[in-house]
Image 1 (spheres, helix red, strand yellow):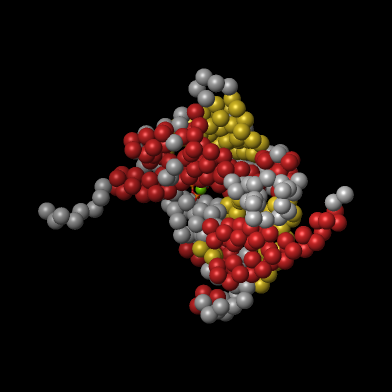
Image 2 (cartoon, rainbow, N blue to C red; image 1 turned 90 degrees about the vertical axis):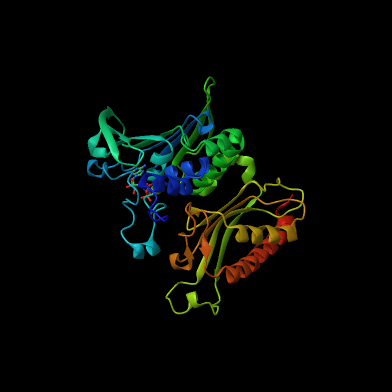
Length: 363
Ligand code: ADP
Ligand code: MG
């Protein structure tokens, strides 16, 4: 027998799933993004025992149509993307059809869903490890979808132990992630709570569906947090570079940066290195270089504190790539170098104009 053999299908599925769902954060992120993609205006995220016992995401979105029940948790089955070309004009968070399939492989998952026309009847869906539909039953349900993930990583003992050991820290990271989604999601009511096995249910934070990100920030971080913020409203054109990617491809070179940032006034406000949220076209993401640029410029005006930052970069969807890492948190900006330079210049200008206005507004 040849020594090179195909890996058995179930194992392939589990190995790949472990790359999509790497930690508590990725579970929550995938479920929340699905609810937002379904057009929800209200969403509740409930943890039991910080997520070790269960993670539930309940939304009032479109619900799932009965004809999709069979394929909803199958790998690479999605309602959001048909072919590779669609990737460039994507306006949903999801596109790979991997999250539910992966969760079936690494946890016990069930879904309760109802469309507007199905109410008050909904359907409870149960799945096999492969993501195949195992069975359905009729239940009473509101419009929307509830996804329940229990026993996460029950079949990956090492990862499960790690999670248990670090659960406080992991839960903290999850809250930070949820805050980022709650702040940017105008018109969506978020409630996040945790219930300990014998304890009371504890609401971590909530927003009330306001149309302004500012209101969401106040709800999430408290009204004090906003006192010393200035509005970010930057706009610049990226100068063309010799990069092959930017030659004559019809891509708009305008970048807008919207949001809020601490005023760089010494002694005012509070240091907030843990309150820095970055987005590209409203998609929360890690942008370490952009974060560094913000912090550097801020430091040149205020050495002693770190700013609160809520920054949404609005740019042509052709000018970056989200399909870089399985969790889509890493975004590749094609012209990052040029962007960083223009961003820094615009920030310096903003802060300089602030310095001049500050003394005048003081009593
Ligand atoms: P993707 O989001 O990449 O499409 P997922 O595995 O996360 O892949 O979800 C598979 C499909 O299940 C989605 O394309 C969507 O049609 C449906 N779905 C998942 N969650 C929800 C939800 N909360 N409400 C409505 N439909 C959902
Ligand atoms: Mg998804």
